Image 1 (cartoon, one colour):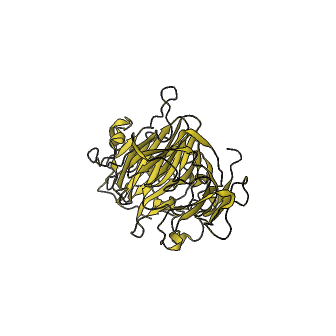
Image 2 (cartoon, rainbow, N blue to C red):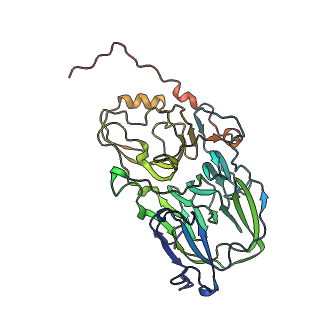
Image 3 (cartoon, rainbow, N blue to C red):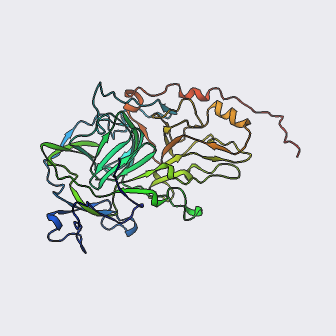
Length: 443
């Protein structure tokens, strides 16, 4: 959207004023007796007050009316959004979904919240420990409605159609091949411009951060300067017919009414903000000799657990890059993993399964479930000439990897009717190449 401005940096201490109200940020203190322009001061805390300084997250918002001015919350239908991980029996099979259906505008108008569908997840929002994986499929903008997630952070991955996200901190346009993070408690509304689809990784109890680089050094992967945060923007708008605030709380949806827009923040400062990132800016690290480096070198953001090196969830991408490894089977190897791997495809063809894995679809390889290249991929790459080649050109696949053993919902297994029942067949043609008489070639 032309004219939108951003501030750059990851986790910075930002400050921003809507230019229509210069001097709206108080000077020298957070909570003066009377704020400039007669505004209300309101703090939004994303961490405990006593968290160590590097992990302490909070922002001060200076708004026309405070958030507390609303009618009581009442329970509303959740649709296909759930935190019930016991709807159906566990399924350890390799699962793959065809592209999820986007409702036609001519059939039914569906906005972002109504279009949320939970595919899988684990843990518990009450104990602040867990994750949810959702897709959104919608065709109309949210009107006089906003969403607020009290349970955790949303990492949103648009796949088809850009989304204009209005937040209490300002506006962000997020396009395909970009991501955004709306952190716990931040109110936002989504405008769309046609049939729209994407993926969401929800994390309870931890915030996303940049992974440690270790021996890579100071630079590489997702660089902090490439993350963008919106600038302050407000509307002083009365809504006599009622503005609806939808609150996701303990896995359920609640709604309340108020008579004004919640996007009435004239100025703000702090380090707890929404942000976006363009995946094309990812500085890829890769193997330049032989064998594979682990896919963890493609981690964009991580939500850490209390166990060192073990993530509640990692957001990993597989971007265009050069493949140059000698004496090496270059595609992903056959694997059984103590982590869950949920994959989605934004565009193009994923190298290990070029036919069945489609943009807007997904796959789930659960804890210790075997997976790897299909027969065509294995045969082709076992005999390919190992010259330098571009890998994944025009493609962007991603993975939500988690230490949680994720359960699939009833919607994911049955209701969506997109589960590929023939997925297992891509490995059926694999044949034995074992030769007991093999001898090493003489050098």
